[in-house]
Image 1: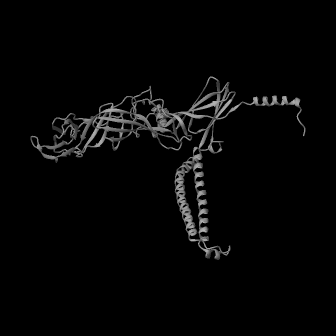
Image 2 (image 1 turned 45 degrees about the horizontal axis):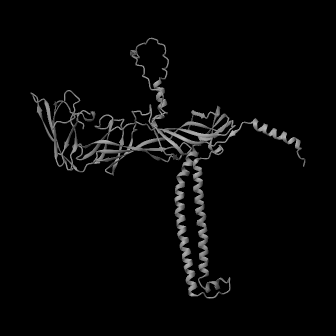
Image 3 (image 1 turned 90 degrees about the vertical axis):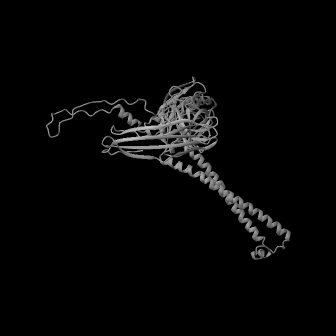
Length: 551
C-alpha cells in the first residue's frame, strides 16, 4: 500500500483546515426555556441558548406549531451579531429528534410494565419448581412411581417437617409477591392509559413543529435569547376566603390555576402571570354612520331611474367583530383597575414545572387580610332564614374575578365568587359581598299575608286592594348583630295604577341595590332581642282595567 510522502502532509493539513473554514460553523441546539409569561389564553416563552465562539448559525428545533412567527424576538450579547433568520414548519414525525414530550413518559411506563411482567413470569417458574419439589418430596412411593431414580431412603420426621416449612414459606412469599406485582401492573396501566389517549389525540391532528435557524457571527462564547408567543396556555384566578366572625376580618388567599398543552414542557422555569391580553384587538370599534332617507314610493307607481348604489364597504366595526369572533371563546378577566401601567403581573418566586399535558398546576400568590362589615341578611317573604354576609373593600392592586372557596371560622361552607369589578348585591362601589352560609342563631318568622279588596271612588268605579305583611326576627347570639331585612314592594308601570306604601319602621332604602321597589330595613339588634317589621301597600286601579301582577 503506498504511503503519503512526509513532504505533502503539511499541505493536506492546511487543505483540511481550509475546507472546514469554508463552511459556517453550526452551533448545536442546547437551548432551554428560562422564563414564561402567561396571559389569559396565550404565553410568551423566552429561550436561552449558549453560542460557541466562531459559530455562524444556530438552529432551535422542535418549537411548538402554535408559535406566532410575527412575535419572534431575538436578542444576544454584544459578542454576537445577529443576521437574518429562517422559519421552517414540518410534521413532528419527520423532524429529527422532535418526539412528543409524552413519548418519553409513555416509554418509561411501558418499560416498568415490562419489568413487572418479567418478574411475574419468573415467579411462575419458581412456583412450578416448588410444586415439582413438593411432588418429589411427597414420599418414596412417588419416587418409585416416577421410575426415574433408585429408591431413596425414607426421610425422618424432622426432615419432612423442615422440608414442609421451607416449601410453605417459599410458596407464601411467592404468592404474596405475585399479588403485589399484579397490583403494581394495574396501577402502571392506569397511569399509561391517559397518556396514550393524549398522544393519539395529538397524533390524529398531525402535530407539527417549528424550527428557527439564525445566521450570526460570534466572536466569543455568549448567550442568545429567543422569545415568542404561543396560543392556548392560560391561567385562571381562584381564591380562598376565610371569615373570622369574632374579629370581623376575612383572609383572602390568592391562587392561580395554570395549564398548557402547547407541545413543549415548561420545566423548572421562572413563571410570571399577567392580567394583560395581547390577543385582544388593538383597535376599538368605531360608530356606524347614522343616515336618513325617504322611503321609496310603492312598487305600483313608476319610480324614477336611479343609478345603482355601490355596495357599502365593510366598516371597521364589522371587521373588528370578525376578528373578535375567535376571542369570545377565550377566558377573560373582569378587571377595571390597572396596576403596572396597563396590566398587573404576578411573579412566582420559585421555579415551576408545567407539563404540556393540560395538567392544572395550582400556585399560591400570597394572601391579604381585609376588615369586613358583617351583615345578617334575610328576605322573610321568600325564605324564613338568615344568612351571614361580609362586605369587603377592594384591596390594593388588581384582583381579577374568580371563584372562591368560602370558610367560616375554619369550616368550609361552600363556594362563591370574588369580583370587585362588578357591583355586588347591596355592596358599596369598589367592594364585594361574600355570603358565608346560614346563620342558625337568628330566627326569622313571616306572618300570613293579609289581603283586603274593595271599591273606591265616587261611583265605586275603582278597585282598592290592601296588602299587609309583617315579619319578626330574633337574635339568639350572645352579641349584637347588624340586621338587614329585604322586602319587595309593588311598583306601578302605568299611570292608571296607583300604589301607596306605609312601613313600620321606616326603611333605610326603598331602591336597594338600585332596584326600585326593593325595600331594605337595616338596624342593629341586641343579643336576645326581637325586631318587628311591617309593610302595608294600597293598590288602586279602574275596574275596567285588567291588572297584570308579577312577583
